[in-house]
Image 1 (tube, helix red, strand yellow):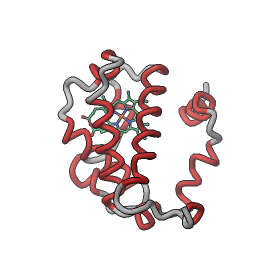
Image 2 (cartoon, helix red, strand yellow):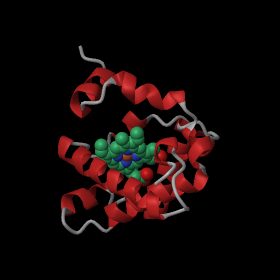
Image 3 (spheres, rainbow, N blue to C red):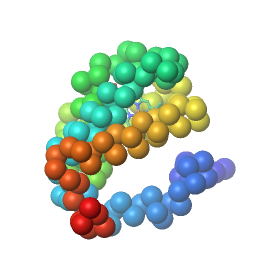
Image 4 (cartoon, helix red, strand yellow):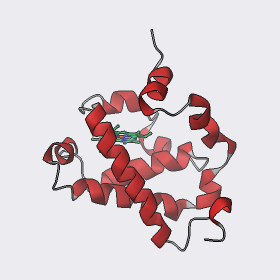
Length: 138
Ligand code: HEM
C-alpha cells in the first residue's frame, strides 16, 4: 500500500526530498513570528471572504476565524523551528485526525493551496520585506 507521504508526493507533484528541505533551514528564525501571523491571517481572510465558492467557505462554517488563524500559525511556527506553541495549547497536532470531520477533497486542496499562495504573496507588502537571500535586492 502507498504510504501517506508517497501519496502526498504523487498528488502534489512535490518530491518528498524537496518537501523535507524545509528542515534544512530554521524558517522561524529567518521570518519571525509576525510573518507567520500575517500569513495565516491573510489566508483565513481569503477563506472567510470566499463568496465565489460557497462549498469551500462552508467547510469552515463551524470554526471561528480568530481561532483558525491561531491554530494554523502556531502549528507552522512549531513545524518551522519555533517554540512548540501549538502543542503547548492543544497537544499533538494529529492533523489527519483533526481534518477527518472535513471534506478535504482534491478540489478543496486546490483552493486551499491557491489561497495559501496568494496569502504568501501578500506578505511582500507587509512587515517590511520577507528576508530571503534570493530576494535580498528586490
Ligand atoms: C488540503 C486542504 C485543507 C483543508 C480543506 C483544510 C481544512 C481545515 C479546516 C476546516 C480546519 C478547521 C479550522 C480550525 O478550527 O482550526 C483546519 C484546521 C487545521 N488545518 Fe487544515 N485543511 C487543509 C490542509 C491543511 C494543510 C496542508 C495543513 C498543514 C500542513 C493544515 C493545517 C491545519 C491545522 C494546523 C489546523 C488546526 C487543527 C486544530 O487545531 O484543530 N491544513 N483545516
